[in-house]
Length: 169
Image (cartoon, rainbow, N blue to C red; front, side):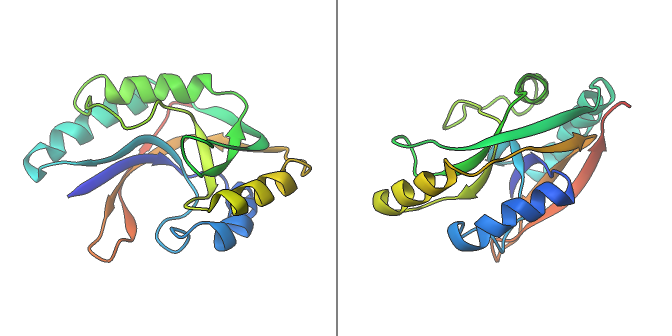
Protein backbone atom coordinates (compact mmCIF):
# COMPACT_ATOMS: atom_id res chain seq x y z
CA UNK A 1 0.00 0.00 0.00
CA UNK A 2 1.14 3.59 -0.65
CA UNK A 3 1.78 5.74 2.44
CA UNK A 4 3.08 9.24 3.13
CA UNK A 5 3.81 11.31 6.24
CA UNK A 6 2.42 14.85 6.29
CA UNK A 7 1.49 17.85 8.40
CA UNK A 8 -1.89 19.47 7.86
CA UNK A 9 -1.63 23.18 8.73
CA UNK A 10 -4.35 25.22 10.48
CA UNK A 11 -7.73 25.65 8.83
CA UNK A 12 -6.89 29.30 8.04
CA UNK A 13 -3.76 28.28 6.11
CA UNK A 14 -5.71 25.48 4.40
CA UNK A 15 -8.42 27.95 3.39
CA UNK A 16 -5.88 30.26 1.73
CA UNK A 17 -4.11 27.32 0.06
CA UNK A 18 -7.38 25.87 -1.22
CA UNK A 19 -8.37 29.18 -2.78
CA UNK A 20 -5.46 28.57 -5.19
CA UNK A 21 -5.46 24.76 -5.23
CA UNK A 22 -8.99 24.47 -6.63
CA UNK A 23 -7.72 26.26 -9.77
CA UNK A 24 -4.13 25.04 -10.05
CA UNK A 25 -3.83 21.64 -8.31
CA UNK A 26 -5.34 18.51 -9.90
CA UNK A 27 -4.90 16.75 -6.50
CA UNK A 28 -7.25 19.27 -4.85
CA UNK A 29 -10.04 16.72 -4.30
CA UNK A 30 -7.70 13.90 -3.26
CA UNK A 31 -6.00 15.34 -0.16
CA UNK A 32 -6.27 18.49 2.01
CA UNK A 33 -3.40 21.01 1.82
CA UNK A 34 -0.31 19.52 3.47
CA UNK A 35 3.39 19.85 4.12
CA UNK A 36 5.03 16.59 3.16
CA UNK A 37 7.53 15.16 5.66
CA UNK A 38 8.10 11.95 3.69
CA UNK A 39 7.10 11.48 0.07
CA UNK A 40 4.83 8.59 -0.90
CA UNK A 41 6.31 5.13 -0.34
CA UNK A 42 5.17 1.55 -0.65
CA UNK A 43 5.08 -0.38 2.61
CA UNK A 44 4.26 -4.00 3.22
CA UNK A 45 1.54 -4.35 5.85
CA UNK A 46 3.82 -6.60 7.94
CA UNK A 47 6.10 -3.57 8.53
CA UNK A 48 3.33 -1.13 9.39
CA UNK A 49 3.48 -1.64 13.18
CA UNK A 50 7.24 -1.07 13.18
CA UNK A 51 6.70 2.21 11.31
CA UNK A 52 3.92 3.31 13.68
CA UNK A 53 6.16 2.58 16.71
CA UNK A 54 8.98 4.61 15.16
CA UNK A 55 6.64 7.53 14.42
CA UNK A 56 5.28 7.44 17.98
CA UNK A 57 8.86 7.68 19.25
CA UNK A 58 9.62 10.58 16.88
CA UNK A 59 6.49 12.46 18.00
CA UNK A 60 7.18 11.99 21.71
CA UNK A 61 10.72 13.36 21.29
CA UNK A 62 9.79 16.41 19.18
CA UNK A 63 8.48 19.73 20.46
CA UNK A 64 5.52 21.41 18.78
CA UNK A 65 6.37 24.60 16.85
CA UNK A 66 4.92 27.40 14.73
CA UNK A 67 5.20 27.43 10.95
CA UNK A 68 5.32 30.76 9.12
CA UNK A 69 4.32 31.03 5.47
CA UNK A 70 5.82 34.19 4.00
CA UNK A 71 5.79 34.05 0.19
CA UNK A 72 4.82 32.09 -2.92
CA UNK A 73 7.52 30.34 -4.90
CA UNK A 74 8.11 27.70 -7.56
CA UNK A 75 10.40 24.72 -8.19
CA UNK A 76 10.78 25.73 -11.84
CA UNK A 77 12.74 24.61 -13.89
CA UNK A 78 13.03 21.31 -12.00
CA UNK A 79 9.28 20.97 -11.62
CA UNK A 80 6.26 23.13 -12.53
CA UNK A 81 5.02 23.33 -8.94
CA UNK A 82 3.90 26.52 -7.18
CA UNK A 83 3.92 26.55 -3.40
CA UNK A 84 3.56 28.58 -0.23
CA UNK A 85 7.09 28.83 1.19
CA UNK A 86 7.84 28.05 4.83
CA UNK A 87 10.02 30.70 6.43
CA UNK A 88 11.28 28.67 9.40
CA UNK A 89 12.39 25.42 7.78
CA UNK A 90 14.56 24.05 10.59
CA UNK A 91 11.81 22.37 12.72
CA UNK A 92 10.49 20.65 9.58
CA UNK A 93 14.01 19.58 8.57
CA UNK A 94 14.62 18.08 12.02
CA UNK A 95 11.28 16.25 11.98
CA UNK A 96 11.95 14.95 8.46
CA UNK A 97 15.40 13.66 9.49
CA UNK A 98 14.03 11.88 12.55
CA UNK A 99 11.36 10.20 10.43
CA UNK A 100 13.60 9.02 7.59
CA UNK A 101 16.57 8.00 9.76
CA UNK A 102 15.14 4.66 10.73
CA UNK A 103 12.54 2.54 8.98
CA UNK A 104 11.58 4.84 6.10
CA UNK A 105 15.10 5.56 4.94
CA UNK A 106 14.64 5.00 1.20
CA UNK A 107 16.02 7.46 -1.33
CA UNK A 108 13.67 10.33 -2.11
CA UNK A 109 13.07 11.70 -5.60
CA UNK A 110 13.81 15.31 -4.61
CA UNK A 111 15.71 17.03 -1.80
CA UNK A 112 13.46 17.81 1.15
CA UNK A 113 12.13 21.39 1.02
CA UNK A 114 9.28 22.14 3.45
CA UNK A 115 6.47 23.73 1.45
CA UNK A 116 2.73 23.66 0.83
CA UNK A 117 1.87 22.96 -2.81
CA UNK A 118 -0.87 25.15 -4.32
CA UNK A 119 -0.37 24.27 -7.99
CA UNK A 120 1.19 21.44 -9.99
CA UNK A 121 1.40 20.11 -13.55
CA UNK A 122 1.15 23.64 -14.99
CA UNK A 123 2.38 24.46 -18.48
CA UNK A 124 5.45 26.73 -18.64
CA UNK A 125 3.30 29.66 -19.84
CA UNK A 126 0.68 29.15 -17.13
CA UNK A 127 3.41 28.81 -14.50
CA UNK A 128 5.02 32.10 -15.57
CA UNK A 129 1.64 33.85 -15.56
CA UNK A 130 0.57 32.56 -12.13
CA UNK A 131 3.95 33.09 -10.45
CA UNK A 132 4.04 36.61 -11.89
CA UNK A 133 0.68 37.37 -10.28
CA UNK A 134 1.57 35.70 -6.99
CA UNK A 135 4.93 37.48 -6.71
CA UNK A 136 2.96 40.65 -5.96
CA UNK A 137 0.69 38.98 -3.38
CA UNK A 138 1.44 39.43 0.31
CA UNK A 139 1.54 36.26 2.39
CA UNK A 140 1.81 36.36 6.17
CA UNK A 141 0.30 33.25 7.75
CA UNK A 142 1.24 31.12 10.74
CA UNK A 143 0.12 27.71 11.90
CA UNK A 144 0.77 25.84 15.12
CA UNK A 145 2.29 22.47 14.29
CA UNK A 146 1.50 20.06 17.09
CA UNK A 147 0.95 16.82 15.15
CA UNK A 148 1.75 14.92 12.00
CA UNK A 149 -0.08 12.14 10.18
CA UNK A 150 0.62 8.83 8.52
CA UNK A 151 -1.70 8.79 5.52
CA UNK A 152 -2.44 6.08 2.96
CA UNK A 153 -3.84 6.14 -0.55
CA UNK A 154 -7.14 4.47 -1.34
CA UNK A 155 -7.83 2.75 -4.68
CA UNK A 156 -9.65 5.83 -6.00
CA UNK A 157 -6.55 8.01 -5.37
CA UNK A 158 -7.93 9.74 -2.28
CA UNK A 159 -5.57 9.94 0.72
CA UNK A 160 -6.91 9.09 4.18
CA UNK A 161 -5.37 9.40 7.66
CA UNK A 162 -4.16 6.10 9.08
CA UNK A 163 -2.86 7.53 12.36
CA UNK A 164 -2.11 10.91 13.94
CA UNK A 165 0.97 11.51 16.09
CA UNK A 166 0.97 14.34 18.67
CA UNK A 167 4.16 16.30 19.28
CA UNK A 168 5.34 17.33 22.76
CA UNK A 169 3.81 20.57 24.09
